[in-house]
Length: 347
Ligand code: PBG
Image (cartoon, rainbow, N blue to C red; front, side):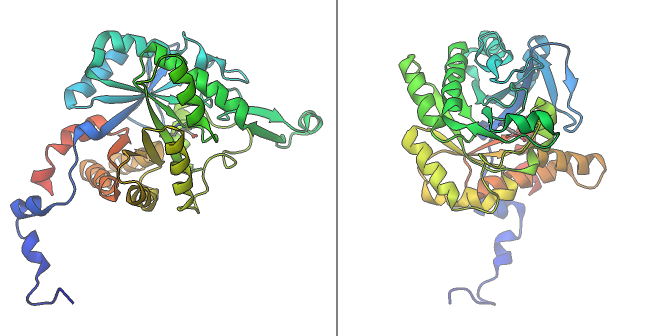
């Protein structure tokens, strides 16, 4: 037994702010934060209903201003998502060089050069008319036409990963520094690494959404990106919330296939998974995604006056960092970068 009262009094090390700062185990820095940004191919800037304070930006001056504001607060990394009404069964706008994401990449590279890191989500759900993350094959066309019940379908893994490879090359050509496959297809990292290397993009980083759970907390994002599946759900490809150890299999496979950074998503409901992955792979940079639903919960409580927004955001980010994440993707990146400077005077 090491610790015994009254010899040991843990309160001694909490007695003043200066002492608390000295013994603190966790620190936050704006350089670890990534801000997700929605870019659209037509129309004007819109606020996202379920995510007050977040917008869909057309490719133009408002987008440049938003990035510039974030840069001034200290944010250096951005994760782009495309929003479009031009959807088709194969999500072909995702690998079109005139899609919203390549256009945004070119504009931002032109304006910010290498002073920022541009990341792109590689997936199909924003671009497919059925809203699934891959190529859908209907197994029973008779049933689909004769009843209104849910169509029988499968998401074809191997057909999908070759499309992801094309998307990744398309984004790399437009200037992406990092591509982030989020579709949870088997072999997606391998397919993307090979395609990038074959096209000369050996320096483009892969940040894999290795353990992405089938989560209700993506709800507001699906409104933002108009990407909810029109039938069925994502449980045949995203991970089951009941499983933690399975994340180690996904991470191990992604590393074997060439992932540079791995991710756990969502963040707060999966802090145990963040910790588990970090303990098994301490040498691998680990990202955690504080997803749309996590943002909206804090925002809604704050707007109602039920929670102190700044303190709730700081505490949630510290929790994610303390669990073991090196990088945090958060819609609060800009505000948090400013608030982080106050941590030592508020905790
Ligand atoms: C695309 C993708 C999703 C998110 C990131 N990439 C949605 C989904 O899987 O349905 C969710 C991000 C968020 O909720 O903030 N597959």
